[in-house]
Structures are given as C-alpha cells and as structure tokens.
Amino acid sequence: MLSLYTIFAKYSIKYCKCSLNVCKFEILFSHLLRTQIYMLMAESAKRARFTKVASARVTKIINYLGLLQNCSNRNNYEYDSEDVELMFSEIGKALRDARAAYSNELNKQSGKGGFSFKK
Image (cartoon, rainbow, N blue to C red; front, side, top):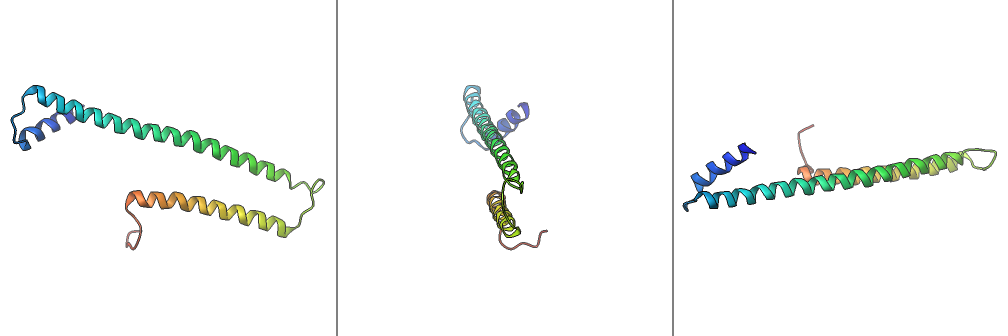
C-alpha cells in the first residue's frame, strides 16, 4: 500500500497544476484506494461465483454420465453400435461447443483473434 501511496503522491505533485494540501491529497488517495479495493472485491466475487456454479455443474454432468453408463447393461437394455456412436457423437459435439464458448470469451478478453504469426 505504501508504494501505491508514494506513486500517487509523486504523480499528483508532478502533474497536478493546482496546489494540493495534505487534506485534499488524503481525500484523493482514499478515493483511489477504495476504487482499487472495490475492483478487487468485485473480481473476487465473480471468481467465487464461477467456482461455485461451475463445480456444481461439472459434478452434475459427471453424475449424469454415470447414469448413462448404467444404460450399458445389456440385461436391461437393447441397443446397437449405431446407437452408441450417435449418443457419443452428440455428447462430443456438445463438449466441443462448450469449449469453443470458453475459448471465444478468453480470446475476446486477451485481444487475440484474427491473423497472427505467434504460436
């Protein structure tokens, strides 16, 4: 925190044309600090919500795949290889679509996309 304070102090003294007394400086610094803390808390809350929701949904998917696996018992169900291929191709397609959605969002944030020579 001290380094943020000193950086802010140097900036405001060097670049601010008005004369800042200590009281005004403290008000500006506390506003800057509150803004930074709020941004960190907001990101932290989003991360917490993501981990809570995503882990619950991944657990559900795994449980449902277990239920689907129960249908493999030939004593109780009748199916052929085409049925199995159709089921798993649809599951694979849904997985690819979900992964693509995450990749698209990550590419938006990082500014990537389009042509690039970088590997």
